[in-house]
Length: 382
Image (cartoon, rainbow, N blue to C red; front, side):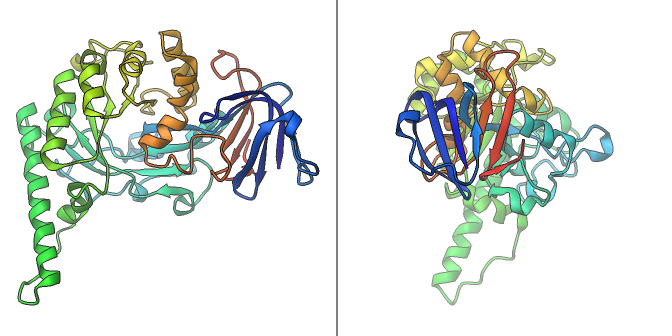
């Protein structure tokens, strides 16, 4: 398939004012100016962008798509039976046939990082998946994609009867489980090299934390307040975790610290109210300030907090509040892909990458812009 006559935002190799994107099977084959269009390139089909904008598919780096329904019976977001449930897999809870998946595709959102909510200090394993399909296993890009941790108000309030009631207790509980996981891993390692050592009895909770404690699986920390952000980094340094801050509402207050520590931040939702105390300092300038400080930043909707179809609008608001326009686009494309550990496959229009492509009738930051065509894995879904 050949896409022609559009402004091509490659997101890695600049912007081409009038260019083309050539797709074969599930991959991008060639990108360039119209003057360099190869002969017979469009034999398999041509889409004329008609002067619109051609972009990589948008990526929501943190949401709860498929786990949160419109009625309580469909809500699989938070597990209330225990404060720590790392053994839970979002893969087992996502419903891919809900209406919100269709709305995501129509907005140009081709990939999402979705997982459990923030009620638990350790909530479970998230999944990175494409937004087209009916069988979740066939939509997966990476599973597990990360382990969800939560600090702040949510875990200390929701589990106060049988869990932490303070920020101190939340951090202590996370330390306890990570320490147990390290000891569990050590016993397994010793049993493999020493026939005299007995392997530990299988523990689903600790087994799920083994790759996190070993630094093989990223740790995504829900943290709004600046002190919670710093606690997440402190815990990560103690245990050698691959840390990403999710939300980071007060990140702009510690932007230089985040930049020095080299910790990425997924900001959002900021198209929302200040409905709880830890959101009192919410500012739409947050992402711009973080980016200027040198922090790698992505933007999320935290769907359903902000509807997933508004992801491009969220990036537009960040640009309106001082973020460089291309950097704001990167926050929902290449930066989001890199933070999710899939920058080699997603997030830019580069040869060899997945053919996830969005064609907009105007710049995606214009309030009335629409996606006219959306391709996922080279297949036209809109």
